[in-house]
Image (cartoon, rainbow, N blue to C red; front, side, top):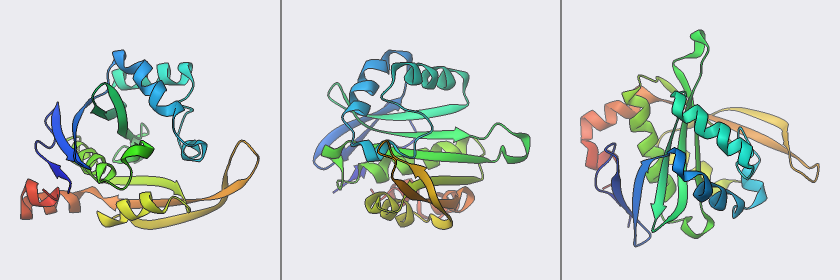
Length: 200
């Protein structure tokens, strides 16, 4: 069972897979924990990310972007360990400023326990508060658990880009782009109440 006790108020407390999880915004002091988390991920999970988060300089850049407000990242913490995150990356161009890209990553030990759904829904609530109208997400076709999580809260396939990403061994993979109307998620919150919309 997965429940969220305090959505969109940080720090928040959630339960996933029988574990208590703290949700909070990423800060400058999280560099080491993020690197430890990233370096434990399967390499395939890193394919569709905007930056190589196993690299110290890339994490420094991520933290700078977060401090500047263009990127907001919610961390999921268990004990002293990062076990997942959700990032809302808003487009900077004027004609697409209403669009944000959502990226969610969960540690292998927490997959299949509802944490990905909690992080995704938290990110949507954050997007609503920022006035974002459309969210997009990208993943390779074999990331079936992630696709199911996103489709479960209303994401729909929008494009399939053939041979769009290449792994370190040179193998090409198709990239699936999904999208969601953020306003519809907001309507669900209003119609059903926060607890119901978040599956609590």
